[in-house]
Image (cartoon, rainbow, N blue to C red; front, side, top):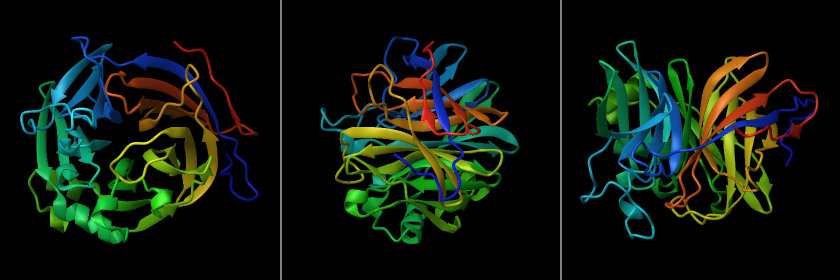
Length: 328
């Protein structure tokens, strides 16, 4: 796996410093973790198979309702025949409302059920939630990417000042490359708070050539902006036929990109001999050329609790290597 640019090899290295299995305070597993962003003194995790998010703080995990039940259900799965109903919240992005921190959760977009946005903010230390249908915005994003709506799979977002870069996962087997569009954060927040979703401008698109592993194309699952303007992308090589159905994951990776140029690409270390599909990234801190990330894992198994990984990404090394540090 080699995504370095011509004439330049920054040699990204990835270390796994922490591994934690996620369970709510009542012992129920956090499942299908798909996005993570800071909220108050903790971290809000989106679950793509649920109407609840998970608020991780002070070692505890609290459930936060973000959407009403669908046909009386709060959890959805293929085994139960309810996967088509799930809101599929895949994105968790830092935002603000009236200058106060908030988290924006966004659906993947491949069906009308998945074209909703949620805003979570704190009022007197308690989560306050607003949600809205955003179908016209998703239609505009599909048009900008020159895709039919059923090929949308908007799985990640990075925050760039007043702009959200929204990433479509893509599927090389279906001829869809990973790509992004730029959307003004304030307009997006306003739409979720009841504004006109059709009026949200959809800016330039960028495409990302991430290559393939064992004949399966790597595709973006999330992104995080670095202070220098570059972006770290998480990517998975998942043998899936379309934007809805899951498939076996043969490899996962981190890509360092500058604009639409892939500067370097490095495999994510296996944990306990298992390839974990990282679906959400959050930046804890950046110092001395190292990005310290939290990464959440969705193993596409409703019986397996999601995992949060503490990743340390060294962007200064002279030669590309992957090493696993001691789990804690």
